[in-house]
Amino acid sequence: MKKFTSFYILLLIMVSIALASCATQAAINGLWQNTEEIGTIEFKATGEVIIVDNMSATVTGYYKIGEDNLITFELLASDILRPSIQPMPKTVITAKIITFTEDTLQLRFPGEDGLENYRRVR
Image (tube, rainbow, N blue to C red):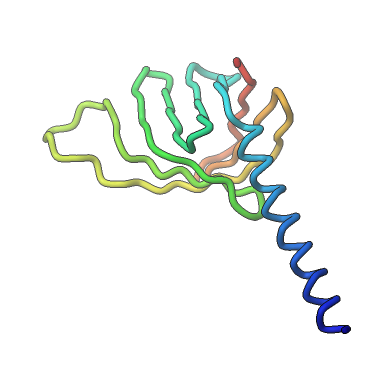
């Protein structure tokens, strides 16, 4: 009997963690504007992401929010001019979500000083 109780408690904890990460992923959907420079990140419900930098270069790919508030970007395509027409290799970048509210998103990217601050546009 005690084994079953422990099993159900462990199962409940695992389901709660999974639901919490899904809720964050769903809540982040939308268009976010960088508050310090020109640039946006658009998170779509399909898991797609579109990033436009301060020079209007666009990078597309996918995102996933995991444990410890880490968001992983798997970037697949870019409109940035390159010397060849070879496909862009997949690039994986992980950022830490420092602050996340309905209208505020703060990210720390590895190797960069400071934080990137975003506000929800829609």
